[in-house]
Length: 119
Image (cartoon, helix red, strand yellow):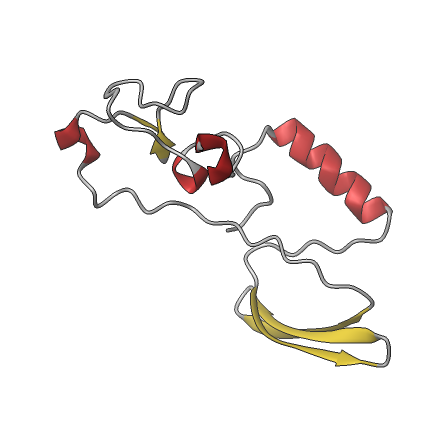
């Protein structure tokens, strides 16, 4: 993923990133972590980003791994299920707007990525 919080309002994400950086956070998107080593009250993180290997010595690690549902090969149109870009088109009850027998949750919808909302 090459941007932070891609399914959220860009203006809100930009404000969040500005404030996070102001308080000293470094946000790296699209990185692949190859190792985290605990040492001397902190951590050394090894990761690949932009085609290069990187290392950071830091006090705290936060992982905000995002997922994108892989719906493209499911032929959802054959089941009468409409899409809203890369996610299912659902109503406020998480029901498909085009096929009321189908519900979406988690990574398949654009709302909160919490499948517990569907239960």
